[in-house]
Length: 542
Image (cartoon, rainbow, N blue to C red; front, side, top):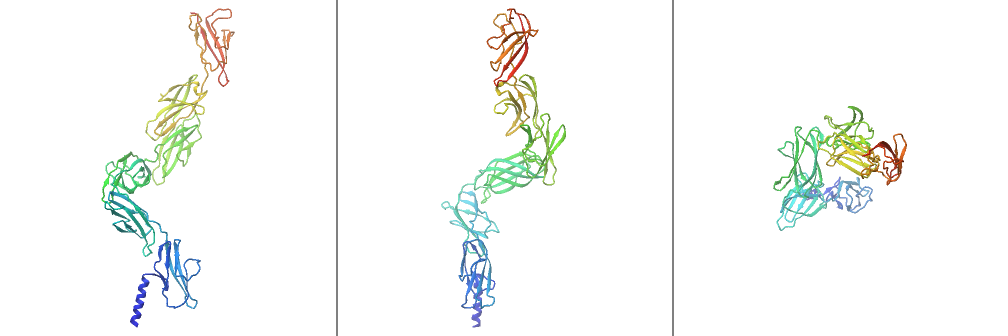
């Protein structure tokens, strides 16, 4: 009997090892971990005989004699057992019932060839995963490589199931099923644009914008010496943009290059991509494309802003700093501008790290206008100073007051003679515009007032030869005018308000007397404004 009793105790211990026991060993459950909904069944192991055993499965829950319970909400719980009141120490507890969310495992895969792919599990929620196809079953642990090569016969369906498991837990958690595509490896990435961005000292970021294959595995390589390439990234490029951070660049480099290769993880084949390069200086990405441009009567400062430092601005007039603007952003507008002054600015970048400050001098284009005669002007200008070296294409833009109508003078000389007409209204304005690519620099704007000028010949010959027999005038804006002719003594000798009745050179007594005469024309424009023009001419008898 003694030997039999020892065997019973041994078998009881073995049964507890297969279960998760309570603190006092009075009850157990098959698994203490599982995914919602997670049903547990309690097995009692005490020797109290026929007695009431009550359980609570959640905080605040009502006691029950049920030995099974289903958890529907993920969390950590404990089970308490209360044995009839006549038993000393009647409370026993099983701590840490873990209930997980049954999240389907994430995965991705890359092309190798028409009959092979390489599959990656893309999360680490579970302790291990099982990958099953029609002819393969693979187990991957989270603490090791979560990728595997999958091969298919030509006639096989390319279906796969990925199921997640926790160690020592009920196998009721998430799974994912999908049908895979297979094809030959190709390099189908297309680079739209890219940028190297300064971070600190020799550290830079590379951002590329692209379109790429969904299931292609890529390798990005960098070169700063023009000959050798080193990998900076391997993986998928499934978004339209990616930034590679913390790239250490040789400070003596003159050019930075990169390329994107397609690789087969199954057999290490590589399809090398095109090489993209840009000129490099130690300040690349800090003060690039910095310029100043007039916006109406203000000056705007524009630059490619680097996020790893601060920009300050010194305002300079006649080589003296007259104002400092601290911590500005691109698009900053200086509103304290006098039309009589010439301005330049020093844009200063202070890195967040312990590196030297960098600066660049910039100034907007500036024009000067001199009136040569009514409606005729000479325009000169100062070219802008900026941080880019591209040649600007210049043109003068002349507009009406609200800029709704414009005319241009392309590729002007410096200085350039500009004539204005009434076509753009009486009040006009002119400015210089310089363009390269999508960057435009504008100068200050100068007002031009159109002057109504009636043309009166400097001489006429009333000799009845059919040429210049009348003192005709031209360019009257309306027919509302009065013209008077004065003798050298100031006497009015002729007056008309009729465009069909101009002076024929004869005095009231019919005589024609050579000499100089003075005229006065008063006229109205289209808006009813009154203008007065005085001048002189010569009468010649030939």
